[in-house]
Length: 260
Image 1 (tube, one colour):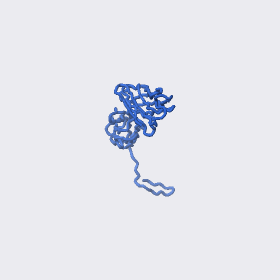
Image 2 (cartoon, rainbow, N blue to C red):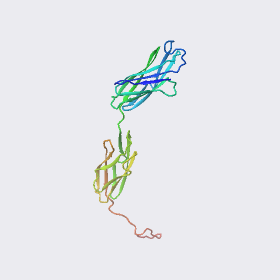
Image 3 (tube, rainbow, N blue to C red):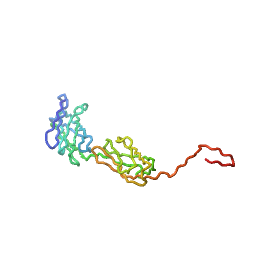
Image 4 (tube, rainbow, N blue to C red):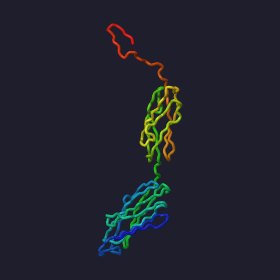
């Protein structure tokens, strides 16, 4: 078997694949004899993001004893869509694998590509492949916090869990809390965050001023705009007195009393 693949230069994609059958020299070979061919595509359509690729299998059926060469031509693809045609190694020369590549600047929309199969002495057949070009989903992430109104007592701490919802982005995200007044700090465990959640511990010193303070949770990631989430931190006064036992244990006789 001999296989020849050719793509001419130009704005349109035009591929040519010649499938040469290995015959004995007897019977019709495309020069008559009532032979025929068929062409099927699998799949008949596909959706591809700009900058992506898709693969389609074209299968040739032969009838009427036809054993001649079959040429597959690909036409109608828009500028920026290119392709290669190869043969599967185990299909006897009756199938072709077409890989379509969509350029990153191709306009979104639907492109109809016509695949032609022809041979000497047989009628040419066609099959249509519908290629839908889509915009890739942008890389992004969103932040959410399980407690956006934290309450902390002077000299104590409180923790909150931040959830990161990622879309086409797996990079590290650095979390910071902006706008906290003196005496209040925020520490993020395992920062930058590589996963989908993080714990932030807020601490108020004993000298932190009581009150409610606005703050901003900020996410920063390489190549992406910062993501911000508003929150508030309320500091409450520490208790004005403490209780302390002078004796950890006392004995009291029934009907009597004791002090500690």
